[in-house]
Structure formats: structure tokens, C-alpha cells
Image (cartoon, helix red, strand yellow):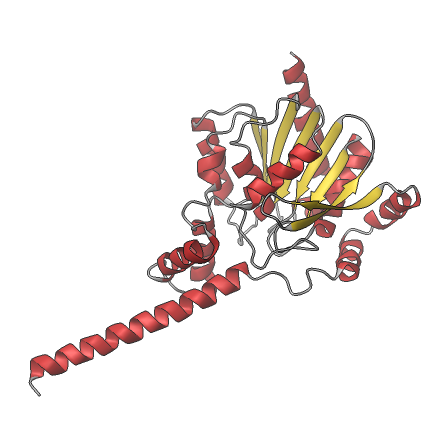
Length: 320
């Protein structure tokens, strides 16, 4: 066998090994990123975790249950799936849609529901997203398709005044859906994003580097293609920064000063992108010392203060 043939065979073997390794690693990465929490349907565990971290929610939940004001709600989505939400009925014409994060569920963010119901007088809708909590679905959608589900919940529970408040992946959903024109029946709506990422591509690429020390090429590209083939969306199109730049609704940006999971620098880019776009009223608050999704936990008084002031100033501006 000539040297040329040997070299050709060696190159062929290397390419086959490279492709097989890349495909296998792509499946692993996709599964690692999109697999739901195995305890997603264990509501008792979720409540225990909530009460341990935010003990003030326990007596509030007990009081709601005594008057049957906390309800489990199931809805058939346009996709045909059956999704679940917690609904806190306060009465009146103000409703908050609170959207949870990656591998979380509605119960994990009852502390925000308490803020809206107890201190601001809102009804609160807290959906379990696709493949989360008690909602159907096999794989997490990282917010891109979830924005359509969130809009569906919004349309079902719409009132004159509304606020959409998301944390982490829920914040990305909040920004993504803010680019859509809201139903005419909603007279006043505000959006609050807490530690949302700029795009799925940048968030996963950052974790690929931080956790595994790997560059974007080839895994990000191959995994994104695989995601498109399997689930109908790609990492590149799932961009909160692109969508938020189209928004004209009032937007409050919140981020922990010590966030490394969704790096704090992302919020400045999001804020600037919206400022250069169609814009509208917007504010930014950095919770110093807070890590990812800990701004309320570490800076409770500041968090409540900024939310209240943002909503009241936005409402006043809307009336004027």
C-alpha cells in the first residue's frame, strides 16, 4: 500500500472518529441542557424547599388555602399539551404573571407571588412551563417556544393592569414576549426581568467553557443543529437581546452583582440593546453581593422598593 493511500486511510479514520465523537457529544450536551428536573412533579419537596428558603411564605400560603384563594389550574395549550399553573385570586383588575427559571417550577417562586398579592394587591398566575412542574413535555425549551405558552396564559387571565415578572430563563421569556403586541384589553402592562440571559447560544457557550473548558466550535454548532432537527428551534434564534430591542413596554432590569451563571455583564448589554431599539421606559438595578437568582433573597428591601417604585412610576406615566 502506497504512502498516499495510508495517509488517506488515516485521514478518513480521524474524520470518522471526529464526527462520531462530535455527534455523541452533541447528544450529551443537548440532553444535559434540556433535561427536566427529575423531581419536577414532587410538589411536597418543592414546598419544603420554598418554606426553608423563604419562611415568610408558609403562613401566607396557609392563609390563602383557608379561604380557597390558591388554586391549581390546568389548561390545554395550543400545542395539545396539558399545562399547569398556580393561581392566586385576590380580586380586582390587576394581575401578575410570574415565570420561573430553568429546571424550576411555579412553587419555587411563591415568594414573588406573595410580594404581588400581599403588598401590591395583584392576582397572580404562575405557570409551570413545558416539561416543568406538573406540565406536560419531555425537554426544556430554554424560553424560545415557552414565550408562546406564556402569552397564552396572559391572554386567559388578562386584566386591565398586568405585570410580567420572570427570573433567569423566565426573565429571558419575559424579554422575548415583550416584543409581541399585547391584547387590546390590557390597558397597562409592565415587564420585569431578573437575571435573564442575552441568548441561549451565549448562555450555553459560556457554560460549555466554564464547566468543560471547551470552545464553541464544533459542539455549539452541532448541538444547535440537532436541537433544530429534534425540537424545532435552534440556539441562535432563541435570542432575548434581539427581541427586547423591539419592545416598547416599560421594562425593569434586575441582576445580581455577583452572578456568574448568567454573568452580570449580560444585563448591561440587554439594557443598551433596548435603549438603542424602539425603547420605552426602562430602569436598571444591580443587587450588589447577590449571585444568580438571589437578588430578592440577598437584597429583599431593595428588591421590593425597586419593584414598587417602577410599577407606580410607570402607572403614573401611563395615566399622564
